[in-house]
Image (cartoon, rainbow, N blue to C red; front, side, top):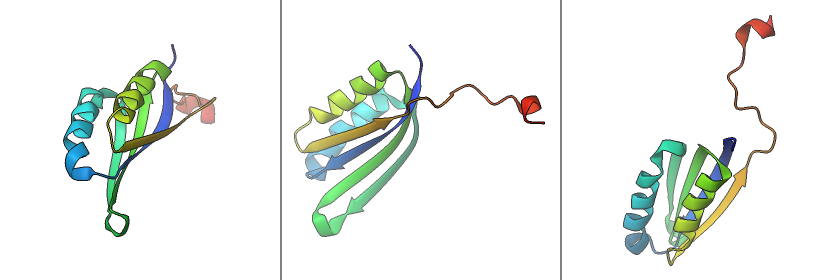
Length: 94
């Protein structure tokens, strides 16, 4: 199965209760996380994490499924379609 690049949005409305479990799951799947941005949205009592992931659909699905099963955590994801994941051949650009 080919790897896909994706974006995963994680929304926590009970950060104090959910953050330890979320961070545990993210650590278990750290090999496919290329980037992470955490943002406290205090005005709405919400905490948002955006992830850039690189993995198979099964791997990404396992991550989002575990996160979405935590009460107070909401997850949305978007995966690449036809983006090539092969390194660009620099000599072909000339």
